[in-house]
Length: 198
Image 1 (cartoon, rainbow, N blue to C red):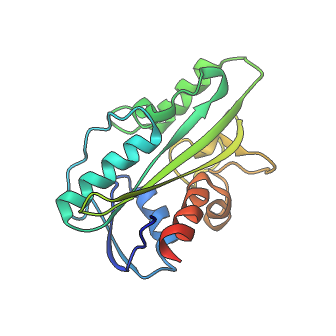
Image 2: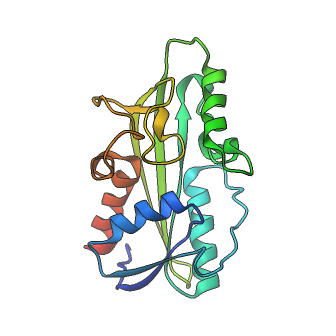
């Protein structure tokens, strides 16, 4: 049975400022008081799940247990067809300890090389966990192609090299309101809202 969020404080289980900002925007219309895991001083758990959903659950459960509050987490990344889905769940790790996504994008470009098929997909898994162990999960995707060189300084992560199908701007070039309407995170969030907030 799906559980509804009753309102009040909600931990956003992320230490990624860009991701936290996007989730805060998506939560604005609902009866929530979002607070990030970083603001609460919660440690980042080791993400050793084998899928986006598994890692999202791991982060949400950890934040919910440590804070005693419901927690929402996001695990997302870029999957590239000709790289057999890489970087996938390792998308953040490709950026290294310094979280240098210029280097991560260059690595993707180097590994794809001259292969004409530049199909890619952004995937987002959301997990909403309560301190008693109950968890709800949702997954959204958006398909596109990789461009080089990267374009735009909006967004974060791999956004500047991802051109969503049917659009002429990369996620790095798009106005944030436009991106929020079509992104993988927005797709997962619509499912979360329908199940747990409405």
